[in-house]
Image 1 (cartoon, rainbow, N blue to C red):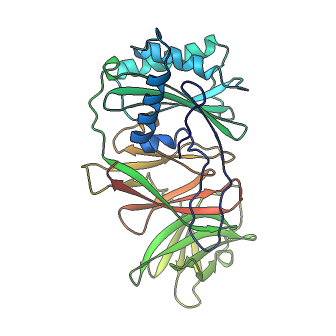
Image 2: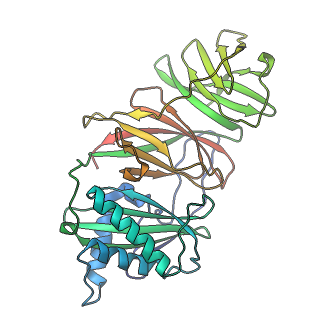
Length: 367
């Protein structure tokens, strides 16, 4: 639900508590959508934003160029209470200006921030200021959001589309659909999907106590079989990486310096041997509409803060060109292909509850 800004070009949102259940998938509710979750709802958010700015912009204040918009946005960011630098700036765009101009406005934004004594840093522990540029049929919207003291503060400015020459990249008519399908207090390292008897089931690589185990989970969320890797010589180490692939008869676990085969036969066991694993590349989903695929990437490596899932057109190299975003209640621990070719599984740790959660991600047609 969108809450109308209380100030020109501002938005302030409190987080609601997370609903938790060990049996059923649930949705997380917000008093107000976080600023970059709003970017998933471009038509509604941008319509509301542009209407508010048009209705309230004081006479004589004109924003006709991207430089003007950057200047106005930074002035509004500087009004955020308790914002003290340094900040780490991340850019997310729903449209991409020409390459040269793209660099120039980002450089200008940094200079404007520093001119108002808001230092910019690359330190991963600094507060993240997320800046997004996207377009409506008639306007561009430049927005910034930052999380401070469990609140999200957002500022935005609109300007005519003619202010920036578009690169001509097509806007794909797709949206992210996210469903929470499993949660547990056990620490999940990775997940895989499998089709059993026409139903989707999960395979989990997780810690139970001091053991790393592989678990078959049926469509109702019940554990059908648990195989420990401890008898095969697997011990807990500082390197917590692990990847799981599975089918109806067995699972394969890739660990640092080791590969394990797990049988689903009755009394199934695990057999491991020394091997250098080949870690998976980014998962690519291809929706029914459009000609290309979309890569799924996580926002960063900080496991103490909430994360963003970035869905990037395949073939675009840098994360700053991401077109679709979805927020999560904690760090994203793994992204794997789902049981069907059009789905993916995202493992995250819900920071408010401490549970580990698995989300099914699909790309649906239409905005």
